[in-house]
Length: 113
Image 1 (tube, rainbow, N blue to C red):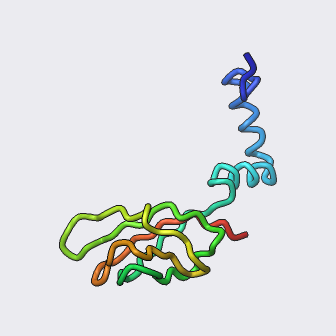
Image 2: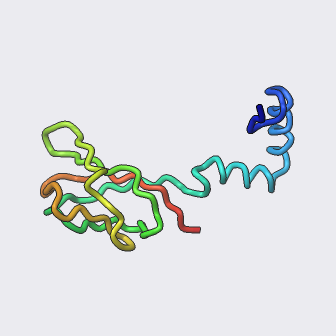
């Protein structure tokens, strides 16, 4: 059966070490391992009525990883499934949970070059 890495573990790790010493190849590998070029970003924004919420820096090509509601006096609530990146600098949960008075912890993969 063919394997993804045709080398045994020791040979694979040896070649990986050689690659990392080559700065150009090492940078390419690091970029690949870092979510194929994504950089994880975190933003805390004010909650509000269901709908658009401003997230400075987010773009429509970015991958929305998580949106958590942080209520003033309760546990964090995962609202990721309600939200999408609707426009540059904006996420939206139209018809979703009203987060007025709360904050939103937004985690996303920045894919902009």
